Every structure is written in C-alpha cells, then in structure tokens.
Figure (cartoon, rainbow, N blue to C red):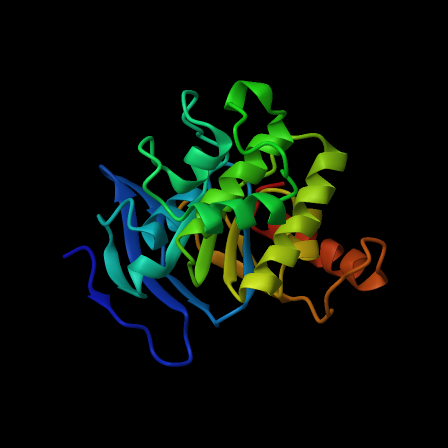
Length: 245
C-alpha cells in the first residue's frame, strides 16, 4: 500500500500523513503529519538530504511510493521547481500557457505576465532572460492553472540575495492576491521565517518534524523585526539538537 487518495476535510487544504518513505532499503522519511489551511504559508526547513524535497514530491504526486495517506484535490496544486525548467524554444507567454500551438487563455497569460513584472517580455525567449526573470516566468506558469496550493522547491536558491528578496516579496503579494496557500522547501532560515505562518524544522534521515515554529507577524513584514531574530535562534537550536549543524 502506498497512497490513499481522498478529499481533504473542509478545514484542511492539504493533509499528508507519512508513516514511512524509503528508497530501496534506505529510510528517507519517518512519521510526519502535515496539514495546511486555505491561504496558509508553510515552509519546510532543513539541510540538504533530510527529505524536504521528497515530501514535496509526495504532495505533488510525483512520487506515490510511500506508506501513508494523502488527502487533497490534486487538480488544485501548482509546482515551481528549483530551476525554472522553461522550454528554450517557447516564448515567455507560451511557457506560461505551456503550449506550442497557442491554444491557451492568452488573456490570463498576459495578466500573469504583468503581475510578475515582465510586461514587454511576452515574446522573449528564455535565453534572453536573467535568472530572476526566468523564475518569475516559472511562478506565473505555476499560477496559470489557478491552484489553491502552490508548491515551491527552493525556488530562489539560484539567484543573488537582492533578487531573492524581491522574489520573496513578489511571491507573498501573489499569494495574497490569488488567495492561495504555499508550501515552500528551503534550507534558508531567514527565508522560511520571512515567508511563513509556520515553519517545520526537518531533521536528518529519516526526516521527521523536529520543531514547529509559529510566526505571529502580519504581512507585510520587516526583515529586521526582533521576532524574526528570536525565531531564527530557535530554528538554529532545533537544527543543532537534530545534529544537522
């Protein structure tokens, strides 16, 4: 038995219960109970190899080989990968609509291009874009299907710090505007705390939730807020206790 597909309860946007996930005989994830409410932003924080991305793949149903249960509406989930993964022969607009025959909602695509700050680049090819611009296209593509939940796997790790800050703020604004929940995988403590309502600190294999941090701040947030500094110390302690630092 690997997965039981069902509709989540009315209160949950997502409910994933993992008893065990392994690759061959190597355990990757231990017992995890993950819930998201509509519009909630949750980050999975931990070192490379702790199972964060694997957990995200289970939610995305890119991997169904695990012992446990997933309750969600799969058609309402979008995905943004670590790399933009744009088709090099397609324009920005065609990448967002994900079609080479232009049979997509061009009005919606145009609106998304404006929302992610790429007005004037609809006909540009990926080779003409910077890394930050390419990731804006990937975010727009993730939003095209009007998901209720957007999954993001270390989406800003390949850009410089200043571009990352801008993309984080853009992501928060888009989540608010489109009334969607976010599940973000990151190994950046400051990013996790700045973005999220809750941060789940994941320990080393088998990955389990070592600590859950609630961020009691409204949006928009100040990066210099003392609450974020205090929570950062707690996250570092949790990672140290999990022997990943």
